[in-house]
Amino acid sequence: MRFLTQYPGYIVQIRPQRQRALGDGSIEITQEPIYARFVPMVDGSFVFENEEAMARKQFNFHGNTQELDQATPSDAVNRIAVYDTDEEAEKEGWDSATKTLVEEKLIGICQTTPNDLLLVTGTPISAPFPRYDAFEGDPEQLVMKLAEDGFDLDQVLYYEQVFGRKRPEVIEALQEMIEMEKEHTVSA
Image 1 (cartoon, one colour):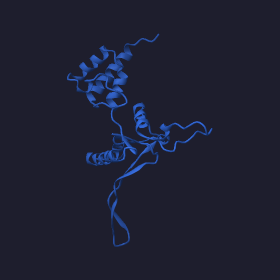
Image 2 (cartoon, one colour; image 1 turned 135 degrees about the vertical axis):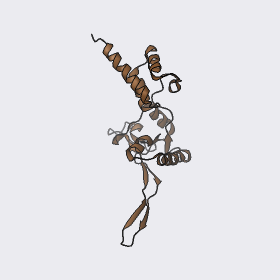
Image 3 (cartoon, helix red, strand yellow; image 1 turned 90 degrees about the horizontal axis):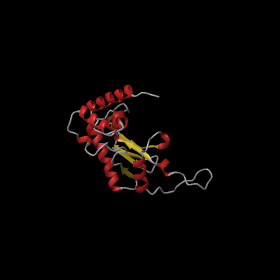
């Protein structure tokens, strides 16, 4: 899940740190804390076009700034910060329970303070056709249908790997078909 905020330095404490004092004056940490640190665009996050549209519609962007000429308003997209639970779970090695805890806490904030946090719904790239993710045939049949109908297989592969069901057999079949197309393409 992806979440957006209009505040570049936004941080949410998901789980507090718990510790116990020891007799020698040191402490033992019994529960590691979890903080959701939102990453602004200037620090390397990426906002898709549909996410930018959702943010502009949802947020007020109080206190808009100006460019150096002191007349041109700065682009509000530079103030958007992103938190992706899938990326964070992979980076931190979370189990499914921890990821669910983080997502539930952030969804709760979205519901109570909608001007602070926005849950991104939908994907930036839609499926090639409406029933793509529920296709009944085998991967080869799916790839043949896509090729016959003239879909851009590179874009379908990207959708499957990033936003789709991430089926290994479909990804492999798409990669094979893309390679076969490259071999049979004659450059002028």
